[in-house]
Image (cartoon, rainbow, N blue to C red; front, side, top):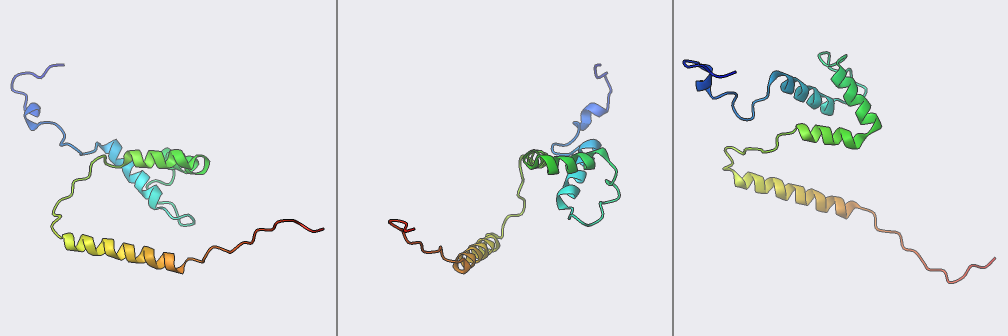
Length: 122
């Protein structure tokens, strides 16, 4: 089918880059809800009896690697950082993470000391 002369839709340029269609947006929202879902809590009502939710549950139980692959494939391939002017705040976050890792390492138990036994006496 060709665009005829005077067609106004061609001037709009189509869907903006990065905008999802309705089905993609629903699948993304369902996947995000499933990742954030805590076991033991009630399932969100809008996804409770959907085939996608059931498929995610089955995949998570039977093959967690494929589950993670599927969720990661739904994530945006490129992330645009806007208004990244506060590099000092980013440095503070990095320092806090490094301090937390150092504190965890300091709290870790030392490896047990073992003796080598030359022979066993019965």
